Length: 138
Figure 1 (cartoon, rainbow, N blue to C red):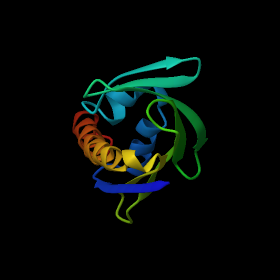
Figure 2 (cartoon, rainbow, N blue to C red):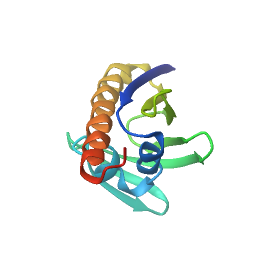
Figure 3 (cartoon, rainbow, N blue to C red):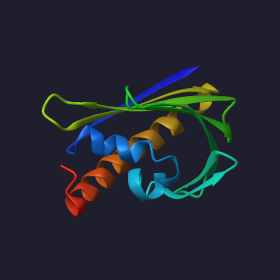
């Protein structure tokens, strides 16, 4: 099993970042615009389309308001096993540390998944910081 970790600093409040992260159906507009081009809720699952045309079905595992942590699993896609989480926390100065972790099988998908997560976390930072300038969430 492969473990992939990405983190970034985002110049928005943790409350603003959490509000976007926990909005399960708005991934393509509020959290990762450009990286995710479509997000549709189907029987509780989130079916997402990435910028490269690939599509996966994600199932929400947990949404922890106190920890500001969301966990999900890809249940229809290229993985034999996929479990991921994203969490926001305060950097000590009122901005956000955003952490995204995934455990995957098979290991042959590690490089591709790590590359996608790197693109994805950059999109999260850009999307949230752009939204902050528009609506003044910081």
